[in-house]
Length: 330
Image (cartoon, rainbow, N blue to C red; front, top):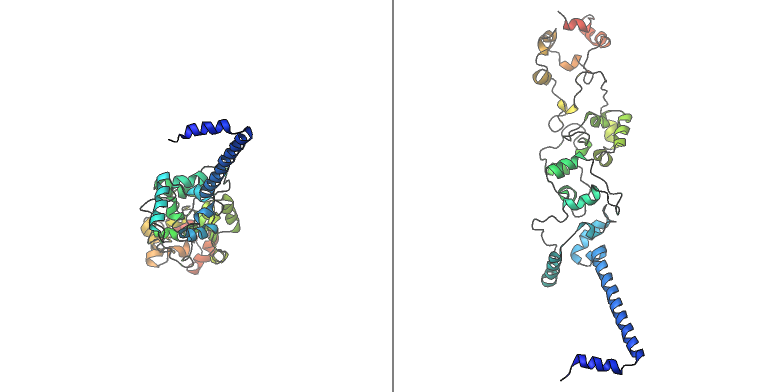
C-alpha cells in the first residue's frame, strides 16, 4: 500500500542539497506568484471600473459614468455589496444570463450615508467634493424628511446634477407662472439663505436688482447661486426695482408676489389682506371708493411712502398741491 508521507520522507533522504534548494525556490516562486496574481485580480475587481464594464449589462452605466462628475471616483467607493450579494449576483449571471439589469426590489443602490462620507465629512481622497454641511436644502430633505440622495441626484444612472425643474416631480402643481419666469429653474428663486428655502428678498434682486447685489450673492457661495444662476438675457430683461432702506413694509417679496399662482399682485388685495383699516384713515375712503383710485397710483411699489416731491408731481394732476401730512389729518 502506498504511503505518501513515508514516500516523501524517503525522497527527502535521497534528494541532494541542490535539489532541496531548487524545490524550496520553486515553492516560494509559486506561492509568491499566486499571491501577486490573486492580489492583482482582487484589485482589478474591487478598484478598477473597467471590471464593471466587462459585463455587457453595465456598458450604458459605464458610458454615463465616464461623462459624469464622478468619472474620477472608483465604482466601489460608492457601490458596496456584501459577500452574499456578490455571490448571488455572480450565480444569477452565470445561470440566467440576464439581458438587462435586474430590478432593485426596493433597495437603495447607494444610500445617503455613503454619499455624506465625501459630501458632508471631509474625504482626503476626494478633497474637492462639494460639501453640503452648510446647505439648508439638504438639511431639510435628507435629515428632516429622510429623502434619499439618489431620489434627486440619481434618478438617471450616473446623472448627478439636478435638472432645472426636477423639483416639480415631487412638488406637483408648483410650476412657475408669470411673464418671463415660466422656464426658470426652481433654484433660480428658492435659496439656502432662508430656513424655509423660500426666496429671500436679495435672491429676487439677483435678477431685479443691481450688479452689486449679484456679486454679493455669488460671493456667498450658496448652492442655488453656484449651480443655478439665471441666464444673462433673463437678468437683462427683468424689471429692475429699488427698495429704499427706510421704506415701510420690509417683508419678503412673496408676501405680495405669488410665483406659483400669479406673479403680479391684485392691488385690490391690499385693503383685503393687510390694510383693511386704512380705508378709514384720512382721505383714503374718498380717494378709493369715490374716485376709484388704486392704491399703487399713489403708493409706488417698493417705496410706498408718499413724499412731498412725489405729491408735487402726482397729486397736482387731480387737484392743487397739498402736503401728504394733510391727507392723514382731519
